[in-house]
Image (cartoon, rainbow, N blue to C red; front, side, top):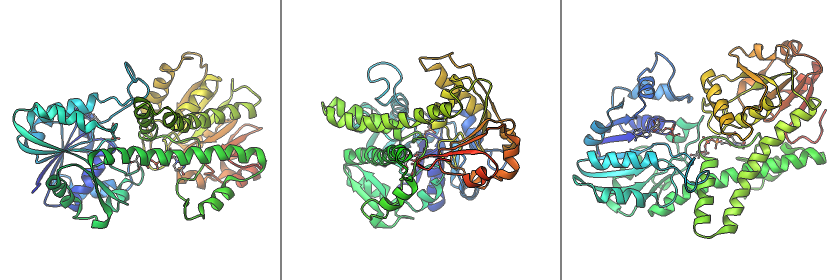
Length: 463
Ligand code: UDX
Ligand code: ADP
């Protein structure tokens, strides 16, 4: 029976998922480890500062389990040595250099973590893949463990389907838990943990490869829906249709359903783009070029969705942004998270900066340092690096971004942007003043009543 768990990687997945597991399984002793000392210090700072991950409901769960049966530590080796089961929850970014750069997953972190497990584990150890991985990564792990002297290993795949911003409810009441593996007794051990709070009909057992591929496929299908609706939003704008009416009509078809049909500035987050690229790489690898091209178009549509918004803003502001101030509402890739990975705000702000704009950026949760890092990385990696003449400033008070702004661009669907008091904010702006709403997240009728011009994604009736 499993009693002691080590989770390697204290990130957006590792931290919250182990907190919920500790909460629901008081008999388990869980240590979450990470090489990043600052991250571990922040996790241990509960109640005295901000956690590394902003997630509604997380603090309440942590306050019940931290120090009871959940610990955060930098002693990776020590935690592995004690563990009956090791969860691998390290990052798997897209490769930047070498063969497969820009598409294949970079397995450096997973390989390093696995080697450490191979060196430190004692006795019989179950290793569970949690990160989203390219299909057949378990083969890599098997090969590393085959040469380990001190222990016997079983590799399972247990991909996590939680979304940021709703992580705690997704983890507490998952649609399903997927367990992949070829060893029934190890699968039984893992299932007995989830069975403490997830009903049996929601636990799905498959072979290793189906489990790995199912995770990529789920993300690819979700991303595809967003690219689909964003492509239709652009058609709506040209034809006089309204994307909200279209999505209500198509979502009412029970075969399609209402979820994941909201238009926006394109999908962001750590998973969708990376997993689509993984799938494309896999298809290309097996010579399935039409399959690769099909999924490639979902990524291309997403890039286009971001570029077209930036171009539209420049066009509406008379073709130049020089000496203009643009207020950016929201920098996180979605509401209720402080995560900026692959955020559409990065590409859109970069384009506006290149046109010479001054950006006044507000986000309720993203730190100034995170905005600076994201924009600097993007500019460094772009072929037109240095071309931008613009500048940006991060403001914590929302009123401040409206001061002398020529336009407001809403990029993240934070609830507070739906409650803006336009009668108070609009007078702070220059005229003619614009509001560009890429999420349909604010009251444009109220903005218009204050004399502002407005644009909403997917609306054919522009005012
Ligand atoms: C996603 C998957 O949902 C989750 O199952 C997986 O484990 C990790 O990847 P996440 O990236 O955290 O989760 O957030 P998600 O809610 O899926 O949103 C992804 C992006 O799609 C965001 O940028 C969001 O704004 C965008 N989106 C989502 C839309 O533009 N429209 C929608 O209707 C839904
Ligand atoms: P995710 O969103 O998948 O949780 P993150 O990047 O937020 O991804 O978290 C992954 C974490 O894994 C990071 O905090 C990183 O420092 C940690 N990590 C990567 N490699 C190792 C390793 N070999 N040992 C311990 N921690 C690691």
